Image (cartoon, rainbow over all chains, first blue to last red; front, side, top):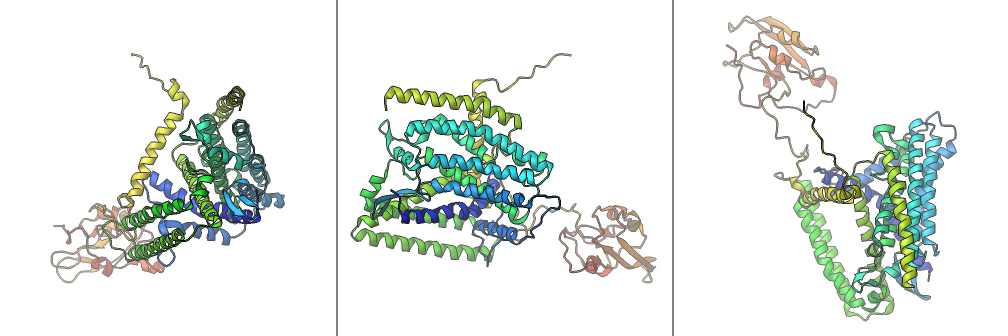
Length: 426
Length: 171
């Protein structure tokens, strides 16, 4: 079921998705926010004239935070706890990723194995435990910075997370009843099937209410808008990270984005079919490698072609001839075109050769990994989109939404799910 | 004195559900996002150093200049009205006798410290000879040290106006 190569591949994917995606997520956040508000966002910083749509800005920001002076406020009594807090927040967010299955079609000498970082079947429990743990980092930060705003922010965050964790736990219970397993890969397997004979059996289709409640509580768990009272700038400066600077602040900042990506990954795994393409389960992918490869080759053309077209249309300033932009567009067009041609040639040569089961499994695994990565990024986009649409809730509204609305709905959902399962005799 | 009854919102089931309103709001923001990402060149942002502002009108208070008379001589008569009106005390004038018969007095030195200047335009208002104007349209002034920002009479006279009206319109 688990294999060393699966764990190693999962380690790479997890690191890329959590650490590697932070600059991309920050860039996405800033550019999406800008486009939503009819602005352009950061697009200036460049390396030798290459802006890559402003992505370089994130790396510049990160470099700045790394080389910034490590400053410790004088009034801090317990420097150990002060330093431990951002590490807990970041570490807990990072470890949440460890139980996400990325694929179950990797063929090894022990048969088909799951690509998952931790070889354990306690998936959901691990997530719930660690999501709760990251709040210790936040309250430790607020307490050890010995600052009124810090402690207020961390208290808000704690009370909010505790309130929403109840509903989240109950929603997870109803999903466990539905899928009959706590193992995330088992849940994804169930979602590979069909419901009513034509719809993919995704969690959001079987249990729409649970899906909505889970997404709302996930927003609250990650302290993101509209539930970001913990850092309400207008009232409490920056909340729990008021006294933090340089890399210590960056760890909180990165922790927020990693937690967002981890929540997205769990939402995708539990409610949006995980690594499954709709209507195509793992067996279908493994049985038809040539059709799969051919369709990837067909999809690549409009995908990369669209990227080239979009870049040539948009990487310029209206009415101004800018040599730097023109050069960047030219070089990136050539790179993308070469990528397209090389990958198409590779696909063609694979299509002509004989398909061993090993190669078929690699193709299926790649497809599934790319599917879940695409889904996670779509969910991240939803997180960002919501942040720039909804204003922050007032604190009493948060509590009343959590306890008066979501909790009764979640309890009712568990009871109804249980009754339906008993009635159907599944 | 009638009573105006204000209609209260939020009572219906649809409004209490809150999700339709969220969906509508997200549609609005997504429309903006889709419009802007499909063609970023129509975003109204001015990409400044590459793209220069196009909305500077003749009333814009830019860097100062000294105007000339029809015969190309300096219009200023060194009356000190501008220096007196200046709230930032950034105009330094040294007067001298004018010997070419056009007028009786002219500035020997006339310098403005642009680091002190607050661009209020009082000097332009105060001038009886239309000799000092702020119609150059220059909004970005660059220098390597403080002295670079003190502009002299020669430089003030050499800076052209940006809006076509060159000479002093006094008398």
